[in-house]
Structure formats: C-alpha cells, structure tokens
Length: 279
Image (cartoon, helix red, strand yellow):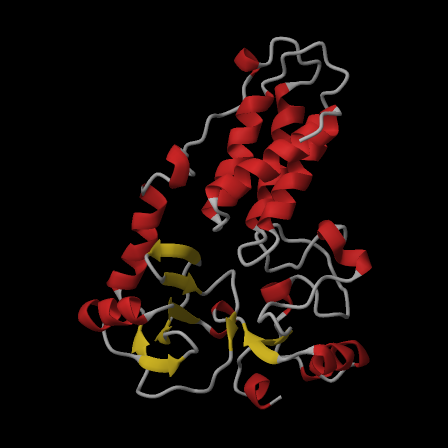
C-alpha cells in the first residue's frame, strides 16, 4: 500500500518471481484482456490476472478479498515500470553492469541477485535481450521490487532508447527477421476456401495474443494461435499457405524473447495438432 501511495502500480509475484496465473475466466484472454495491454479489452476481473497489466495503485483493489488471497500466495512484490513512467534497464550479470557503467548515464541503481537495475525517468517500449545480459522493462513488463535503490534518478537517455531501435532493426535469431516475416497472401494459398481478409484477421489476432505475453506464456500463445489458425483450414482443398502463417507466428514469439528453436517447435506442434499429425 505504501508503494501504491507513491504512485507505483504493484502486483503479487509467486515463488518463481513471476506474476500469478490467470483465473479460469481470463485464461487465454477469454475476457478480452486489460485496457492497457497491446490487445486492449474489457476485462473487469477482480483478480490480479494478466501479469503486469493487472498492476494497480487502487487501494480498494489491493485490499480486496481476491487480491488478499493472492497476496497470501505471493513471495515477492512486482511493479509496472511503465505505469510509474520509469524504465528499468535490467543488467543480469557482472559483464552487463560493467558495460552500463562505461556506457550509460549514472542514475538510481538497485542491486539484484545477479546484477543491477538502473532506473530512469520516462517510459519506453519494453524489449528483451537488447544486448547480452540486458533487458528493457517499461511499458509492457514488470520488475521485482527490491527497494528504492541509491542515487538520484536521471531522465531516460538516448543511449537506452537506441538499444531498442537496434533490436528492432537487427534480424532475429535463426535468420528470422521479426520486422519483415514472410507474409501470407493469396499467391501462396491457391486452394484455400477463405478470403484474404478472413485469414489476415485471424492471423493478426494470433500475433496480438503472442505479443501480449512479453514476460511469460508467449510459447503457449504461439502454440494456441497455430492450432487455432490451422484448424480453420482442415476442410480446404489446399494448399493454404500455412508455412507463411507459421513463419509470422514464430517471428512474433521470437520478438518477445522466446528462444527460436522453442518458438518453432511450439508453432509446428500447434499446427500438427490441428491437422491430426503427431509432433
């Protein structure tokens, strides 16, 4: 409550340092999601569902019966940096800390179990693995509360913003370019009985669902999207261009931090499950 009074949106974290899982009504974004997610929706769930998006400063929510039960299960406190208009540069090891000290402006610093959090004033897009041992946690992520840190806070510098720009322009692992994946179009779907608009709408929803899981669950979301989309084409004479759809799903999962081999396996298994194959 003290953190919330200081305008820091908080949420409970489990023993694995991750947000608690969604309730049954919110599983797989069945509720539509939270308004501040990449896929904004109407979720009015009283439980702390949807990870970072559930973080709040509302004292009535924090003291409610549902959140009270969640707090009793929690082993740590998390917070939403973007909601507090700050950015956390998560330095995961000694080499990353040394790089930051030589490269970035000094700011508020919080010691972690393996490295340090450098906190800057101002919000930006979150991104994982912008360089070895460095993650950016801000608008669509959470961080673990480890104390107020030391030193005055500094405004978000261009050097941190440039890390994400570099990440966006660099081809993702396994030669998949997450910004320009192979696109689905009618030319690769000569036997598909669906309109391009129908296929593209379903694909975009699947991509949005994957992107809505920047901290955890993106692999599961990729599997679910692949299975759902492939199932739409089981009665088509084919081919339907499912390979192109798969590449887009894989690229989206990689872009939010899923290792490339795991992303490809999730999508392949999802499509195989829909098509009746054994992965």
